[in-house]
Length: 255
Length: 284
Image (cartoon, rainbow over all chains, first blue to last red; front, side):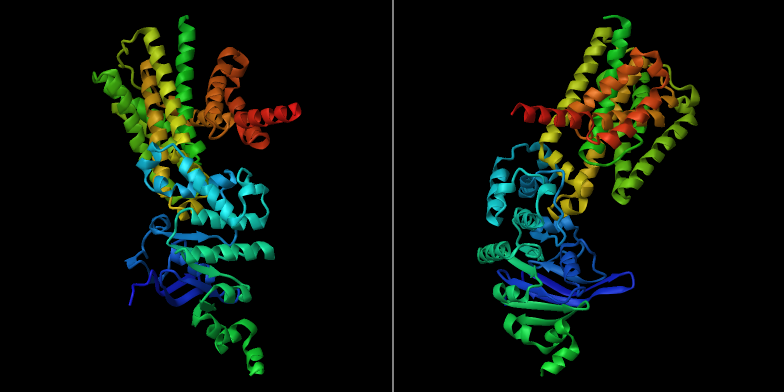
């Protein structure tokens, strides 16, 4: 058996008295595009934030490519190849759209203080950032300030910026929400193509039809617990999953 | 140039050095410091002791910078632990602690200060050239940092720390770097000040000095290099040219901070940028 690229073991997160995640574990093999679904408040975003270290788990471990990263800082995890797109967009508002991506593309330079102070040129990073903006379809906005952009473009900027750090695993927190159907379709296709090109992904998405279309495997959370993990079609038919989504009584009534 | 003009050039140079140092910390990296005078003073006292002990001028300048940078590193560590608004209060406290400490230290001359500082031996013109050379060097360092990936990283830290982290930027390290470099410049300015006045007292490094430096950074345009230099020159010279302004110096600095924050948060640099944009638009 191959070592999983990402291994999450029994991660528990408490916020005050609330248990956001309770002993959630799963593993991800290189090349997968895993769908992470569940009702609102299930803990999906918290799980991604625990994986990248923005939230510190109270218990449990996270391994990336066999290395225990549980105690590493977020920036160290990013340098090892984890990238996150935010559900609520967080562009650097003091920079142009393309500079947001250029900065990320220069991760090899900003990752070391000595390299950062010595390095001035940005040509390669600007070229790469331009390609990524074109890839997600917002090349026209390159020189604009993020404050002037519609939400759909900012969601795609999140994806372009995360891709710019050349991640091994890309954590996507509802990248398609807020896009119109044409934009969402196009971005989903782009993600599938990048996944085929070798980037492993975890995708949070509320549109189950879209999830079923792009993800071969699903992990389902409900109330901070993992209630299902498996092939997409079987998982969506799982009575526990159906109950979580449409309520226990409605699920009983269907049978 | 007469003695008075030479004095003005030296005072302006020292203030520009201080403003450039604070601009690195507060402007480039977004870490508000209300205690910059403490680093200026640390450098000055270290330099005064070294100079009195007979060390040559270049060594004294570097020692002033290094001593201030060590304190800057320590204060920088607190910036990792406290939220942005609390950092302002913490650094203000550092400023008061510095003055309060020095006032009670016999070996630092206590209230009477230090007076036995030897002449720099450069002559008046030589000293002024050294001041201008240091200003030019510090401006060049600032310009380089702003263009480099370090400055790019600083801008990200100033904008949104959490997001900077997710892009692989070691935010604590960047903040410490900003504090160390910025306070080093303040310490060198302190050493220059020592040779200029040959007499230092604790009161020369008080809270009002910190606020004066901050007003230069804010009026010039936080993060803008030339804006800060212009503001430091103007705000130093205005009180010299007008007795009335000199009497109300603190009022002027305070009012300028308030007015700038309210009406032109990007300072002189922002005003010029928007004016030139408007001009270009009216031409087309």
